[in-house]
Image 1: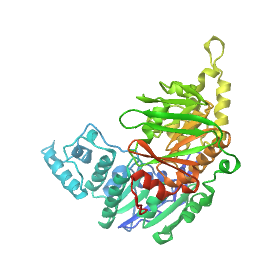
Image 2: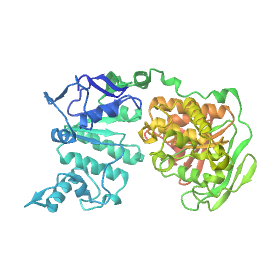
Image 3: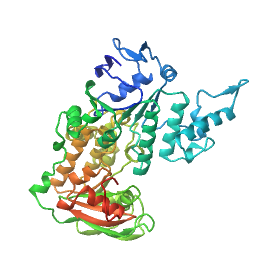
Image 4: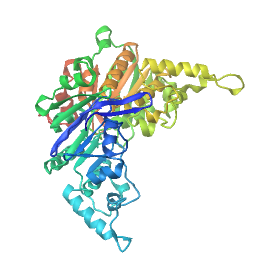
Length: 499
C-alpha cells in the first residue's frame, strides 16, 4: 500500500500511509484508537475507497479494490473484533455464506459440508460442520471466521483484536493456530493493543499515529520503550504514577464486605477498602472477580453476607440501592451492558442524573445538562465533534470515558472498575490511569479488576487475589509482583513466570 490517504469531510483519517506485507509473516499493526488502523484495513478489504493518489500493489501488480468482492477474489479476508456470523445457521452454512456450492441450480449442502469438514480438520476444530453457531463459544466462533477465510483461499488474513474475549488457554490455542497459518504461507496482519501479544507473535510491527505512518520494527527491535514512543511520543514510565500513594495514607474504611457469597461462583468473601486507596482484584478468568463485583453492586442477589458503606450497613437489593449508597460499577461489557450506542454522548452522560434537571411543569433544563456534559468531555478528554455525536461512532477509549463520565456524575464514594482499559488504546489507558489516581487522591475508594498484571501492579496499593470463587490471598507494597499474584491465583508453590 503506497501513499494511502483518506478524508471524511474536514477530518483527515490517513495521510500518505505506506505498508508492506510479506507472505509467511505475522505483521502487527499498532497505534492509538483514531491513528488510522481501521481506515487502512477497510481500504484493503474494499469497505472504503482511498482518495486519489494512492496505489495498491498485490503480488507485484497494481490492483484496484472497488469493494469487498474484489478483496475476496484477491484472497484478502478480515476477521473483525465484532464477529460477523449468523448464529441461527450451521458452521458450514456460515463458512459458505454468499458463495454456496450449487448443483443443477440448487444449493449442494453435501459439498458445502465436505469442504467445511476438511477446513475444520485442518484447524483442529472440536466441532463439526453441522453444529449451530449459536452453540459455540467465542473462541470457537473465531475458528469459524478463520475457516471462512481459508475457504476462499485467503492470502492475507487481517485479525482485529482477536483475543479480547478469550481466556488465557483459548489465547494460547489461537496463537498456535496463527503461527501454523503463517508457516503455511499466509500473510497475517495482527491488530492489538496488547504489547505482550505483539512481542510473542509479530515478525514485524508497523505503527501509525494521527493518520501517519511512523515506522516499522523488526522482531529483534521490539521493546516497550520503542513502541510506546512511536505510538504516543511518551515514555512507558509515564503511565503508572501513584501520586496519591506518596502524598497521603488511606483514610477510614468506606466499603466493608463481610462473607458475601452467591453460593455457587462466589464463596464467602470479606475485605474492606479505605478512602484514598486503590485495591486491585486479580485472578484467572473464571475465578469469580466479576461475579463478586456484581454481588456488591446488586446486579446479582447474594445468598449470604453484609455490606457497609461509609461506616453504615446498607441493604443493596439492586443497582439503584448501590448508587444511593455511593457505590458505582463500571461493567467490563461497555457495549452490551453499559452504553446506549445509538444515543448521543449528551444523553449517555446525563441519563443517570436527569432528575436533577427537572424544571416546573415537568420540563427539563437542557442548559444544565449541556453544561454538565461539556465539563465531562473536558475533564476526561473525550474526543468527539460535539456532545450530540452518537456514542456508537466513537473509538473504544472514548466510549469508555463516556461511561466513566456517567458514573462520576453521581458523585460516588466507591468505584468498582471492571477491566477499565479493555479494548482501549495506550493514550486512553494513560488518561484512565490518571483519572483513577485523581479519584483516589480526592478520597474515593477504588476496586479495580484487571487481567493485565502490569496494570494491577502499577496502580494498586493492595491486591486481593481470587481463586475458585474466594479471596485466596492479599498482597501489599513491595510484595505486589507478577510472580506472587500468579502463585496465589493458580495455587502453585512454584512459579516459572510462564503461567
